[in-house]
Image (cartoon, rainbow, N blue to C red; front, top):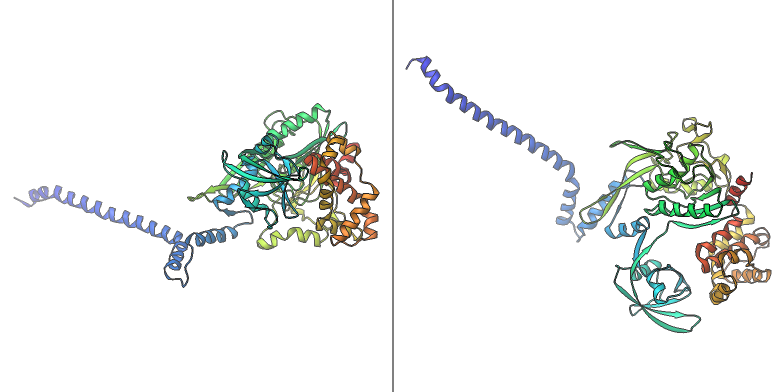
Length: 535
């Protein structure tokens, strides 16, 4: 066989061998590349795991692996921003109940009064109402465990009374007017949680809605409140968002839609891994043409600021009060394998003019959380002139109004906190809790008489009066409680004290419907809003 024929004979075999070798080498290279990636990812993600492993294996004392993991997660999130957080499964359930709009329990509102669980209100239609539990009842035993006079806390009480729907809890109740112990077995059920504290007509044309949170049920609750108030002749609305720390972004957007005409921008969000998303008014709102004033303060945050920003930036209404909290970060809830959750910041939200109202947090969480104290120290709560915004944070609405970004919503009309030497006495009374305690002690033995005399909330608001004699009794009561009489404080704050006693008595009997219509009569922010409508 000549050389040419030998080459033709061996060529296919050589090509086959080269192909196999190439495949082998390629596979080795690919696998080596894959191993490199795996090792890279392993090195990236396993340091925490390695450390936990070393601790479990070699540490001098026994440790909980779960706690080590949780501490590591908490530490990582704390380095990101003030609002990225970790929650255990139990913490998440408790935290999420107000936002979902219901929980499972017995359907009462209670307070610990003089080391006794006192039923303040019964949820209408709930399991406690059905079996005859009444306001004023003292729960002294839960499932054969004594709970009176032992220093029980609110958290411990809630833990014992709440439970899955259909389960039962036995309670012994002491009823003051009966002077006997009554025994009840309550079957737990789903109990609604409302986001609107109260809605009522201030006068013939002005309605008032106090909103405490933005939950899944908020848009429906708000629509119902608007419908009822408009039936009563409402042409002007005071929307009170003071102390409202936020909730569901979607609920805030749906609620803002009620005030704005179609295609008006409500808010937009954007993050490094989240493309910009716009939310526009998309339907005919239920309150597009009437007047609206939004009340805010340093406790108004997140979804509350979205509402206030949308109203302000669209020149739709007036914002009254004090600078809001300044939370412009959007969180998503990501569930872990054991049911725990991380709430991770994924975007910032921006008002229609393009301003982000998130407060700076570069100096750490402690500095961020001390902001309210700083506002008090630098005088902002008493005087808006102490607030200075750089030119880079100034924005203008289409109507030409100047608004500010970079740290909360600045109201159109600023109403400072009342301060000064003449308010020291009043603040001591409030902080000591003696005003509430006096109101409760007055109301408790007279509940039925007051309900008989004042058939409706409006009767109570219009007709009940705190006499001068009762005020004198209160000042003696306060002194016995550790607050010395202060003649200057009595002269300057006497009417506010009288008003707050009446408001607390009203709350103990009629819930929030008996509190806010009284309390607002002396509230300077509320009164300024009413004055604006009058003007």
